[in-house]
Length: 80
Image (cartoon, rainbow, N blue to C red; front, side, top):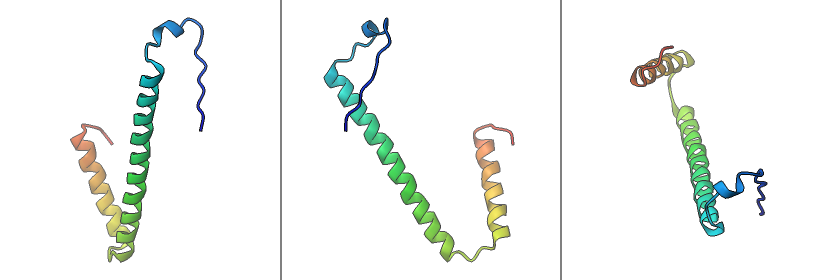
């Protein structure tokens, strides 16, 4: 895989990362993004498997989801 970036004129001097530092930074950011993506997919699969085994009705699940949404909003001081 090859990644190329065009740096606009005037910005060349503001980029002070050496090639090696840039590659290391990009590699770490890529690994973090990949880890997050895999983690989300695993969590979704796990939730899907749990939902199949659940005895909750759709109505009960929606009520619980609403309560969870309200709790999260209160915790983060958001308004619904």
